[in-house]
Every structure is written in structure tokens, then in C-alpha cells.
Length: 158
Image 1 (cartoon, rainbow, N blue to C red):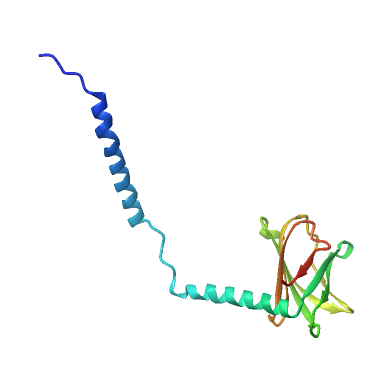
Image 2 (image 1 turned 90 degrees about the horizontal axis):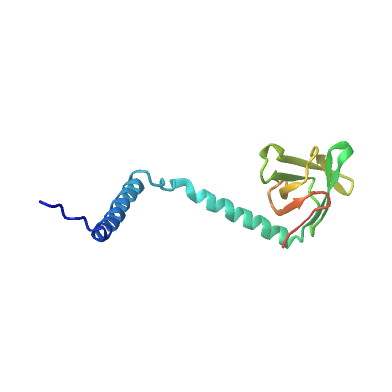
């Protein structure tokens, strides 16, 4: 008896769909057994936080908030000149958040000194920074991303 040769075209025609079906079943099993968890019931707090951020930015726009940040390197201090359409607050909060190095982040309370606000920031290298300036009462805030040196950066509402 002679062996008949195996038809390679038939193997491809049957094999490829069979592999696709097996792979689909495998992916479905993984998806059902190890899928992403559902959102927690308290997730609505995230939305409320975003609403508060938008309200703070809108209030800053209404007050026409404009600020300029200056670095005072010898003393490691930072200074903010603030212009706004209401009485100046007694103090400000300045958040300096580095985009890739969290150890460089600074949260500084700036006290009023004459016509400006000052606080200790330490030495800050150039880089990608997220700046946020707000009043201590949490009524308004302005934000800006800065690439490079932050000295001379301006933060404005709107």
C-alpha cells in the first residue's frame, strides 16, 4: 500500500480558522477571569472634585487673576506678584509639581510681604513643571504648565 500525500492547501484552509477560533476562546477566558474591576461606588467624588476645580478656575477668571512667579536663588525663595480684581488675600498656596520627578515637588505657602508674596521654594531645576496658584481659602486657582525654567512664569485666569 502506498501512502497518499497530505494536501498542504487543505491543512492551511482548516488550520488557520481553527487557530483563530482557539485564540478567540483563550482571549475570552482571560477577559472574563481577569478583567478590569468595576468602578467603586464612591467614584462620583472624582467628578465632584473636577467640578470644584472648574469652579475655582471660573472664579479666578471673574477676578481677573494675573500672577508672575520669580525665583530668588540666593535665598532659595520664590516671589509672586499678584494682580486681581478684589482685596488681596493674606496668603497664597503655590504648588510646583515636576512632571517626572516627584521628589522635586514643592507645596509652598506664600505670605504677603509688602506688595508681593514670598515663601521658601528651594532650588528648582529646569524641566516640565505643573504650577498651581490658589488663595488659602480655596476660592480660586490658576494653573499653567511650564517647560524649562520657571523663573518669570506668568499664571493667568482665562
